Length: 180
Length: 290
Image 1 (cartoon, rainbow over the protein chains, first blue to last red):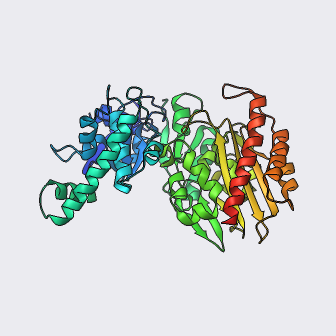
Image 2: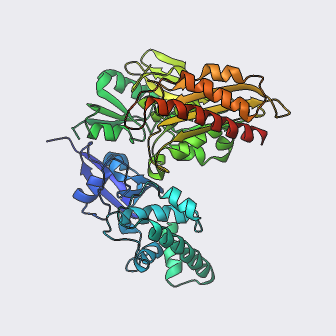
Image 3: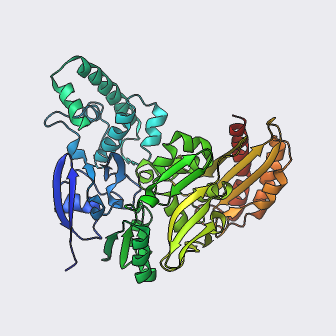
């Protein structure tokens, strides 16, 4: 039996502890040990981005992170993007604009798009395509994804403007959650 | 993936003693974007993986116009192009950091790791060569320095001895009227391994019309990243014109000794070496003029 390491980390804002082998990737532990199957295994070698999570705010391929490296880190997975029962604007736009077909790449796209839009809510088409180059989709041909990300950015900017003038309501809650 | 032991070192000395004890069965983990794939696919093996990202010296990036740049070996690519001062002072390095993999890779992959992986096609090594970077190594016998241009010895091989660790890369302060550029050719828009890469560094006269000094380095045209020294010395004292860049491109193409493989034939790569040399010279000159 291989030696297991105790890892204490934070996932989607919740303190989380697990035991893992050194050779296990963060993706494996998320899916197999923690039953968080939102992050997908596509290529398992860093090409497709289906397993993208935020590690201390930066998008990374969780198949190329050892789970033991998560010690002390803050991780956001696709499960942590929605605000309880309310979808994040990126998720809402992907749904409304049919920016997915089979859906395997979608969690990765949503996580990377969130990292992008949190930094720049009004990216150009070129910026979106460049920043999302590490996420592959074999179904949509990308155009719908690009449009959904652009529209989500506009909605996020509008919600942020709305939130700054109101003290309650979901946009304010949303922003508060993102800030923590 | 086969089982291995994992240790997270917090000092250079600790990392060196861990590495020295296991020899070639110990591997250094920085961003893991090469190592984890290699371990998973059985291309490399390890009994021990030593994470060096908790060692402050390896994660520090410090720059001043007077002192130059000290880049910790494990600093991820996104911090290089994310720092405006560094990106302006060493544009060829920032060019490479911005196109290594996608954003997810750049969040983790380091220039130090790219150098130690020692691929002939590594995007960040030609910029290190033309910027005259020096590698600071620590090992069981103490510290030493090696020029980045002399670090790689063969595909996947380098000068690191048993127990030795790349600690940081040191870049001289940016010179006046000087700049650099890196470009590679790939059949896709992003996310691919260079068919050929080229970096150019130029220093112009104050008037901006003549090249005082230049340095060109190529990727994926030889068993190691290659300094195109004849093309570089040809450029000294020449007018900064497209005719000059074309001649330098020819000279760079002549020293290229590429193999033919799935990414391109030898002839095609020699041609690309010339084209990319011309183009990076033109960009570097334009940047140097400000």
